[in-house]
Amino acid sequence: MTRPLFISKHFKEKEFKLHFHSSYSIGLITNGEQKLHLNSDKKLIKQGEIRVINPNELHYVDKKCEWSYKNIIVPTEDILEIASQIYQKHFNDTIYFKNSINNKNIIEKFMALYKSLSSTLSYEEKYIEFIELLLQDFSIYGKAQKQNFGNIHRVLEYIEANFLDDIKLEELAQIARVSKYHIIKLFKAKLALTPHQYIMRLRVNEAIKLISKDMPLSLVAITCGFSDQSHFIKEFKAIYGFTPSQFH
Image 1 (tube, one colour):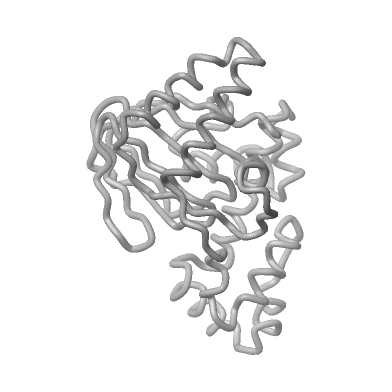
Image 2 (cartoon, helix red, strand yellow; image 1 turned 90 degrees about the horizontal axis):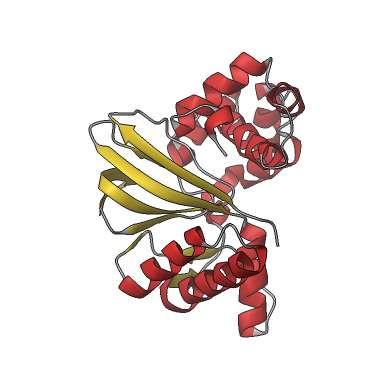
């Protein structure tokens, strides 16, 4: 299993762009409340509650709020691996969790995991125990959301395989067999993002993986297809509300 990323942050009237993650973002609101816009729904996550952002769920946080959280970025592979061990079957499809959880037991498991980081053995045990409880009590098995994207699913698959390259709008239009105008319109209708915005978010998600491996930011920027380090930092901060150097 890959060690997840742990983040503790405070935000006040901080604007986030509409975005998604390739991994799970699981956070406990420790102060204030988070006004979350998720898949066209509005959710108010209060202090003492856990909010879960599943892979590829479009979301942003309302600027008019103040909140603090302890957050864990959990790789999708870890969830599938632990689920396979628990249920003795192979999982390929995304496993979805409830977006808002108010349960004393899971919150205690979450805090125990956070407090165990100084010991590798203890951390691994607490990590598995937390994911196991999350799977058993708060999960929904489902197909990846990509199946709902209609006739642009082939375009999404192409982008996901080539997002580090210099993809042209004309390429995407040809794959979808529509005009360049219509491919932009399709993306906005299905994802609320343009193709360029979607690619930028994929690149930022890829950058997070490299940051967790302690790769220098200048090299991360080049590797992930950004024009330079400042461009990368700008895109990252617009999505997450803080700079890549503050991510650890």
